Amino acid sequence: MELALCRGAPARLHLLDGRPEGAASAALEAGRRLADDFGIDHPGLLAWRPLAAVALHAAGRPERSRGTVGAVSSFKIATCRYAEVPPAASLEGAHVNDAWTPTGIDVSTPSPARMYDYCLGGKDNYEIDRAAVMGFVTQFGEGLDVTRANRLFLYRVVRYLAEEAGIRQFLDMGSGLPTQANVHEIARRFQPDPHVVYVDSDPIVLAHGRALLSAEATAVIQTDMTDPRGVLAHPDVQRIIDFDQPVAALFLSVAHSIPDDGQVRGMFAATADALAAGSFLAVSQFVGLDGETARAHTRKATEMGLVWKTRTIEDFRPLVPDLEPVPPGLVDVADWRPDPGQPALSTVDEPLRPFLGAAGDGKQVTEFGGVLRKN
Ligand SMILES: C[S@@+](CC[C@H](N)C(=O)[O-])C[C@H]1O[C@@H](n2cnc3c(N)ncnc32)[C@H](O)[C@@H]1O
Image 1 (cartoon, rainbow, N blue to C red):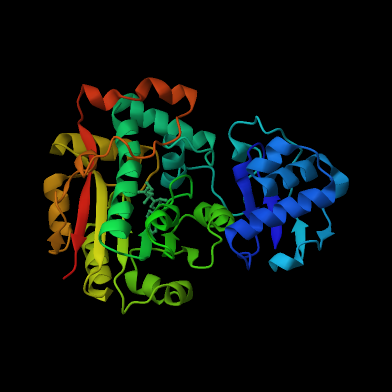
Image 2 (image 1 turned 90 degrees about the vertical axis):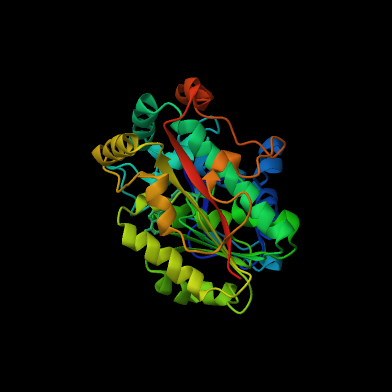
C-alpha cells in the first residue's frame, strides 16, 4: 500500500495502490502505529487523521518521505511506502491540489465533480473549477443553495432507503468526490453492513475515493454510467452487489451531464430492468423552471467547457421510468421529505458565502428529483 499526500489538508491522503486489506478503522489505527514508530509528538493531528499526520510529517522530513515501514502487519498492512510526497506543507493550506495533482487529472477544464466539491465546502478542486462555480453563481445566484440542497437530499434519500425501506445495497452512479456524508457512511447509521459501489467517470474520483472508501464492502470504480450493462458487469460490482436482492441505484445530480435524452432514458431503464423487485431508483437533475432559463443555464455551462444539459421539468419527467413513486414523488429536491434537523454540510469558501441563502429570493433553476420503487 502506498501513501501519498496532497498539500495542506489531512483529508488528502491517498492509498494509491488498491485498497487496504483491513477496514478503514484499521487503516487509521495503522496510522497511529506508524506515528508511534516515527515518534511524532503532535497529539492534535494524531487524534484527527493519524495517517495524514504521519504523511505530513514525512513530507516535512525528507529522510522519512520515502522508505518502507513494516510496523503494522497485525492490521494486514504489511508494508507502507510513502510515495509521491509533495513539497512540505502546512495544515493551514487552502486548496491542496493546486500544489499537487494526481496523475492523469486534467486541470485545464472544469470538472463537475470538482465544482460540486467546491460548492459543498470541499478542497479537492482547482482554480478552474472555482472560477466556473463563481461564473455560475454570478449569473444564477441560487445555484449554490440548489447544489447543496441536492447533497442534503442525498442524505435523506439514503436514510429513507436504509432505515425505512431496509435497503443494504447501493450503486451510487456519478458519485462525485467522496467529501462528506458519503452513501456508505449514511447507510451504516441505519444498516449494519451496507454494500456500496461508487461509480464515476472522472479519474479524480477514483484517485481520492480509494483513500476514503476502504471498507471491505465498498468500492469505487471509474466507468461510464451511460453503459449500465458495463457497470453491472464490472468485477467489483459483481463482487459487492447481489442482484438477487434489492438494490438502490442512485442517479443524483447526474442526468444534466448527459445531454442526450435517449441516453438518460436508456441508462435509467436498463438499470431498473436489471434490479430485483423491491429495488429503488433515485434520480435528480438540474432543471430550469422555464425553457429560456434552462437554455441559458445550459449555454453558461457549455461556454465553460462542461458537457451539460439543463432540462425543464417537462423534459426530464419522461426520461424517468414508470415505477412507483415514493411520496412525495418527483419534486424540487429541497421539498423531498425536508428535515431541518439533518446533519449540516460544511460551510463554503469565503468568496462563495455571499451566495448562501440566495435561493430564498426565488429560484429560476433547481434540482428536481425523487425516489421510485420497482415492484
Ligand atoms: C454533481 S456530481 C453528483 C455527486 C453525487 N451524485 C451527489 O448527488 O451528491 C456529478 C457526478 O457525475 C459524474 N458523471 C458525469 N457523467 C458521468 C458518466 N457518464 N458516468 C459516470 N459518472 C459521470 C461526474 O464526474 C460527477 O462526479
